[in-house]
Each structure stands twice: as C-alpha cells, then as structure tokens.
Image (cartoon, rainbow, N blue to C red; front, side, top):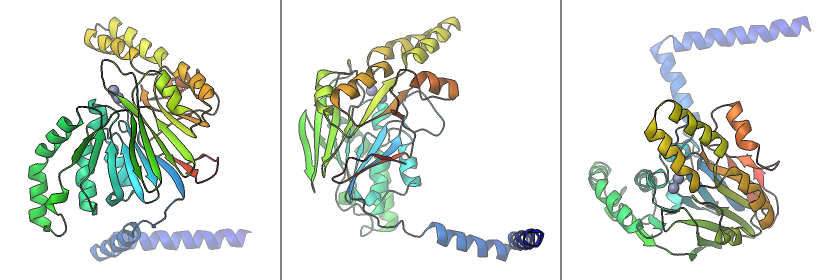
Length: 344
Ligand SMILES: [Zn+2]
Ligand SMILES: [Zn+2]
C-alpha cells in the first residue's frame, strides 16, 4: 500500500515538473496550446437524437441574473433546429453548447417584447457564418415584419463587411437578410414530421402574443411565452409531454415592491407592481399541469430568477414535487415513441 502511494506520488510530481517546465518557455507554451486547441476544436459529434430535444438557451426574464440569458428555448427535431424567442445573452449559451447553427431553420417569436427579440440579429449572423443554406425565417405575431425590417437595416453594414472580407462564396449576401412571416393561431409550420401550432395567450396589454406547441414522432412540447393561464393554453397543453411555462413568484416580487417603496424607489416599485398581472403565478401552474395531464412541468422566464437558496425555496414552495426550475444549458430529451422525459 505504502509502495503504491509513493509510486503514485512520483508520477504526480513528475507530471507537475513537466507541466511547469513546458509552460515556462515560449516553445513549451505553443506546444501545449496546439494540443489543447486540437482537442477543443474537433467537430462536435454528428449525433442526431431520435426524438424531440429541448435545450434551454435562456431561462431568465428582464430581471438580471448571473449565468442566465433572457428567454430562449431551442427545439431540435432530427437535424433541424428551431428557436422560440431570442433573448439577450442566449447566443452565448447556444455557442458554448456548440449547437450546429447552420441547421437553424427558423426563430419563432411569442411576442415582441425586447427580452424575447434582442438577439435575433446575432442568431442570424451566427447561423449565416456557420453555413445556413437558406435565409433565416422569423415567425411571429403581427409586428414581426417591422421588427425584422429594423434588424435587417441595422445589420446591413455588418453583412456587407463580412461578405467583402470572406467572399460571397462563403457568405452569400442573398442569405443575409432575415425573412419575416406573420402568423395567427393555428398550424404555423410543418417540416420533416414536425408540426408546430401557435395558440393565443393573454399578456395584455401586449397583443397579439402566442405560445407554441411542437409535435414530433409521438412527443410534444408546449412553450407558453409570457402569459397568465388561459383556456386556449389549457387546450394546447392537453397531454403534452413537457410544458415550459413562464412563471412569476408573487411572494418574492411583492417583497421587492415593498422594499422599493420603503427605499423611496418609486419607479422600480411601480414597475414591480405592474408586472404582477401579466405573468403566470407559480401557484397556478401545478394545477394547470395536472388538469391537462402534462408529464413534466418546467418553469422558465423566471421572475425573478432565484439568486440564492432562500429565493429558490420560496419559488418552489407552491410547486408540485417533480416540477423543474430550469437553468441555462439544461436539456430535456423526449425519445421517439416513448414516454420518457430525460433531464440533463
Ligand atoms: Zn413579455
Ligand atoms: Zn418576457
């Protein structure tokens, strides 16, 4: 035993001396870096999951939180990727997970609040650079054409710079501008076995606002967008495998509101008061999921995103056991023709 200890210690010591020697010289640093780069830049394995895969690229709301981007959910069906909303910070989460953005087929917007649209320019540019073979479609309720026209104008110079620098073969200008498609409730997309339906939600005074249901190979995911629970939502959610729902913790937000009033921060207090009537209170969601026969309830667009153990406890206390508070980069796998919901 003692012999084993000394030989292990000898190996560790020898390695430490070798690393110290290598990192202490320019040629040693370059040697190590080249090997690290080779290990990091190998292409991600071309694994195609058979089923619906859901990647949380943003679990937060406008209230700021470290390590959380604003609203964004990626749906992977076969090789196709769709995004529901594109909040600030979400491209970083997607890039760190190395999702193959050349396969991004469309961004679906639930409504046109800034915390849901801020990153569509980034996603357009990133997927274009990655080799997306067709213009990016931005699908959303009335107003989406105005938003897309504005982004296209703002990014026109950037697109021109990149084509001039890398060449039109690599970055074709005709694939740069996004295309807007205005939708209403109903079937909005059908491709390679995936069916997407939009349903109206209640986020007044923001109207129209929608949620989306994805069905693929016998599996289903519903994304609420920002809303209070409504009859249309309850109908869309029936029997879903996974419901990702917007959620506000009223006990926490009301404590924030009182705190802002006590501190004389009238503007913050007013905003914290106003937001309480157009998001789903945590306490309503367990009942909704149970009534609709949802297999897995998961909360996103967290208001506020829990910043510590106490806030997380309060957020969870009105939720049924098994409900999930999502975090960025969380993955839900729904294998084809199965009832499993695998959370990673
Ligand atoms: Zn909103
Ligand atoms: Zn929002």
